[in-house]
Image 1 (cartoon, rainbow, N blue to C red):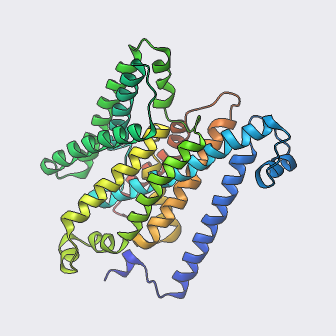
Image 2 (spheres, rainbow, N blue to C red):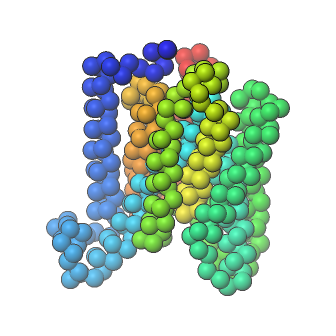
Image 3 (tube, helix red, strand yellow):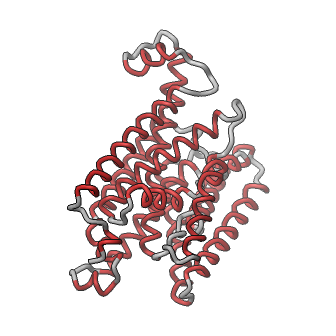
Length: 349
């Protein structure tokens, strides 16, 4: 067994690193969640905010509405969807065995954005409301269509660098079709889809958070249950088959779960860039391990922290003007991707 790849789970130093790493991530998660709830362009006295959240004080209706209807749902959405997006990227990197594979780079998010936008244009044009289930289903279909094209291309192209380029081109095509449809829409509500297409957690409601939780959390749990077969798959198809792993079925699970997680994010927040690529690499550096039993929960925590920090920066840096979440995640995540590619060129990864 390649101990350099896996790490030694019985090592005292390794255990100490795991405990310390998860303790730091857990602390940062609580800290960033608190900061997202209690900071914003509208100044709310800290003592009043605490009474509203923990004591149910409703004497200040304006403050109560800001916290309970805007900030808390938005922070929880960033927490869950950020973790889901990081896990989706980790699954795609595992499937393609490519460190720069991710929902945004491979065009999966753009495919989901296209189908959601078309469904919303069609439904809003008929003056009907768009349900959460319909949005998730539309995004999942778009994700699967894009992944299907990528898989077909991967059978002809063996070089992973060219496969990534094809994914980027597919993403550009989907984005162009989406922008074309939105630009020539007559309804003002449809035109406002442009803001969603740039990526944002704004406008998330408590009902949205409930739907997100019912979809993303079970998918993340199912991903964790696949930790053992993923560990074998990382060492090669032959090794995995020798341990009794059905490689074809495992690949199907990886694609379906990554598509569902990415679809859930796109349906409610639009396409969010670079989280699925950058976070798994940051987690590997922190834990110095590639073991799925470590990477899966750590990626979820890391993605949650990353997205909450970026969302807080997006809404407070130039308040009251709000930037798109993808703008901030690209600024923070793109350098990580560049560093990964440079290391691969040097043969360090």
